[in-house]
Image (cartoon, rainbow, N blue to C red):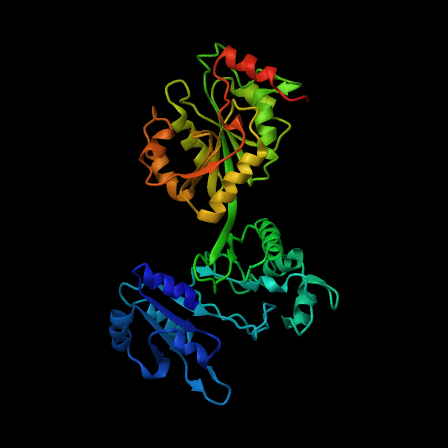
Length: 424
């Protein structure tokens, strides 16, 4: 909580930190200014924010146990009225210094006005025994997950508890985003376990995204952000240079578009939307055996790729945080390339990530949801590369394969690609 407050202040914001449970009195010093909720006025809070940009508000400090009590939900609701306030950060639960827990009947205390809930798990719990020495309320963890006494804490068990309505999803207000933080990730083994956990968590529709990191790191505490990435395959073209529809040309024992779909499906991304136009029925038939969805571009004859991409973005699920844009005439594309591009986005959250081979940009490219409005604003006759030309930054990923460049536009391209097609 205090690390996030520091970053908000560094970015020019104003923040109040508080708690609905109890915090150690020793932590009060982590805020530049502290008030007891029963001894402060709104004017004093606003004056302090004008000076320090960060104020901590708690209940009274109990010198006997060294803890400060929480504040009322009514007070938190009233704090929203303070002008120019970036965020109110609330500690709503405690774990007695342990890395993993299940909430008791009275926990967590989350205000209804909450817009973002961050369940936290320490990655040092992976591989440890499910005992009271390591876990707060292990008996509740066992009751909610069915784990045996003394069982090891695995990525599956952590995800199971975080996705349980009486576990990590307990007390979530309607409409609030849920973004678990897998904290204290330092070793390669912890990172692997955290990535596996994130994969399980994203199978639940209530989980918006998952942050992997270590909040005590001097810089870049968020190491990776995992979220759903959809795929849009642009397959609406008329293939004027080819002279016939290229998506349904023979490719081994299948077709070009079916091979593209198969390879993208192997990348393991959230969903695949194929935008059709010319030869709509033939393209859909070619992909009938794959788990893809179709959307038709009725303006395929008078528009360019940007319009197909706009239609594809509109068809993606609302819970997709980014899109991988592929073209329907690259049957040699390698699933590993898609995974490398997505991984770079997880590490950087860059608005645009593009693969490069020996200095040349290719496909598939990734666009964070933050870049989608600019794509939607393009005219019908535009090409998506116009976004790249005006973007402040494009994150470049160097790959060791020229498959990202080898699309099929002409009969000569088709003959060349078939000659180097790997055995089926």
